Image (cartoon, rainbow, N blue to C red; front, side, top):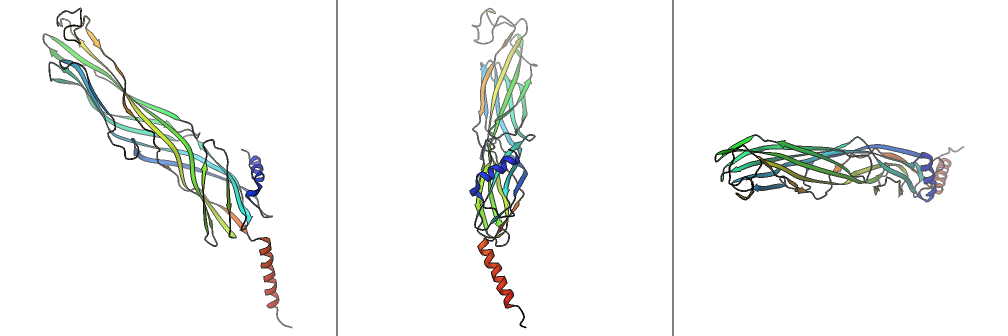
Length: 343
């Protein structure tokens, strides 16, 4: 909105202020940075190990087991923006002061998640013996730009991919090697919804303090603020207790592509059928199996704790009522007469 449009808006709401003869429409611009320090990835009070999955593909004699769990999870970030507006800088005491303000986000800030987990993939052969195919700890770190617009959801993801096809074990008269392609995907979404604040007005002379909640809506439209100033003198206005209202959500998906590789000469009955042990006696020399779409963790949206320092203050002058001013001048005149020296 242009300055002329803001001025027209101020005039249209006429009742918001009764300016003095010397009043002017002043502008206000203040940059803000909302910061969210490291917080639990799982929400307020969330566990540090909020997802796990385990299972066995195949049989106890020849199969692949997996066991995956989270160990840590934090999220942090920043969101920047600008409060701007126009206001009347002088009114008569007892009248209503007014201004119009809005909030607009700016590009360039980011949100980052960090999650650690442990992964154990094992090949089961000939009873309880387990050969570790992939046994490791890993971390995912997804970063997304928080975007300038309120009520605009942004997304980011990170993927861990690991392959380990080289583990070999002996089984009967043949040998078998097992491998796995592991894919764990983290999805984030973040939606800044609005900015809330408390406008605090303090009379520097009398010490009177007035407050009013100001809520900048999701569409960035100007907000009209009205406040009656009962005392004359200089008033300092501050936007305090600034908070970014938002929602954050996350989930994790697991994909496992395990395989068993046989050498030539592997015998388990009829090589042309799958009837022998029910799983891996196949005619070809390689069997692969896919486990897709397993949800490790489906997050519940919650609000990250974004806060900002108070914005810069601005001043408004409340002058006495004209009648009160006349009385004051009259009293000064009378005082002058009383103090006049006798001839």
